[in-house]
Length: 138
Image 1 (cartoon, rainbow, N blue to C red):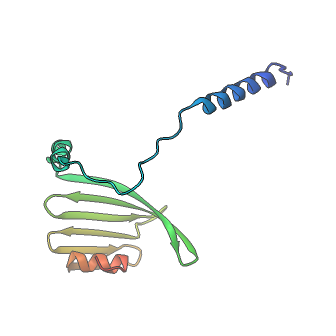
Image 2: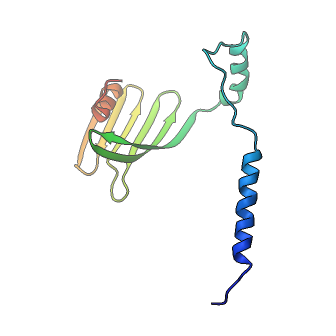
Image 3: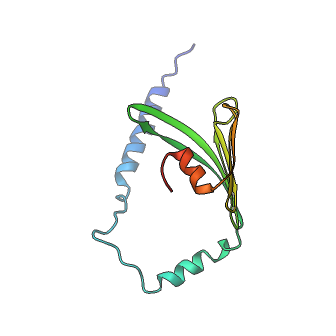
């Protein structure tokens, strides 16, 4: 490998320019202190801003969850799909293999599939089934 004497000074110059540029930047924007107040026409502005979204009837999302339960750290991913007027599907995606659970609901009828346990709960009320999954009343 041949020596490149210009590499050292070039890197130093780039680092120097980066530091000088960062120090000349404007300070980060700060929020005003105290409680905020709504503008008098806030409802109209919100309606105007969300008017193009009113036609949306389906929504899909991938949700990443991380945290701890007691001293145990946990991570997970949920695939969620919602459709108007009252349909939902949640799937706890596993890093490999079958999902942990699949929850599907339409109206007042929900099904919970636990593929790894080869168990299924059919025709349950959606809020009670979600409470069974989450362990928290909704």
